[in-house]
Image (cartoon, rainbow, N blue to C red):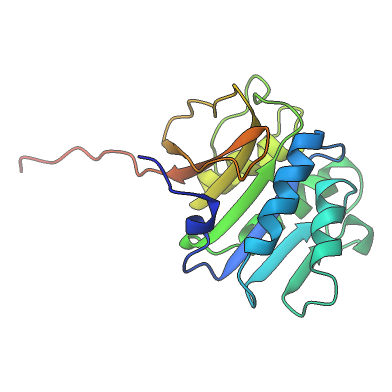
Length: 188
């Protein structure tokens, strides 16, 4: 299945979360700049406290009453590296499940690290953005993933990916949707 464009994935959303590299590729930054104006007015926007993608999103939506910033410096998520994982997990929970929500992810690597897979608990495997995307899918959220040209999304079990176009960038947006596991019908 192919999505017409990234515009269509925002139809009916009530909340959008963002996750991305602290040092995004120039093409990823351009793709994000083209995508941000497409976020419907009044939609709750959730983002972290890092530089890079997070900072661009915070700057674009600054002053908006719909902006939720999840900051490790607040102390609400504890201390150390685990605080960043708890922050990202909380950000994902703020995004509505199913078609009402969307996590936008722009990782710094075109492939997830080994061991990073869809699950309901945190496991970054060395990449916060890939870990956030995997956790979001595991918790029933759709993910709009940007990858450089020539890259394809991971073949994660339980996820259906479709191309959502490039918005003129040197890359492509991919929409990942969690697919329920098939159930065995009982004969009795």
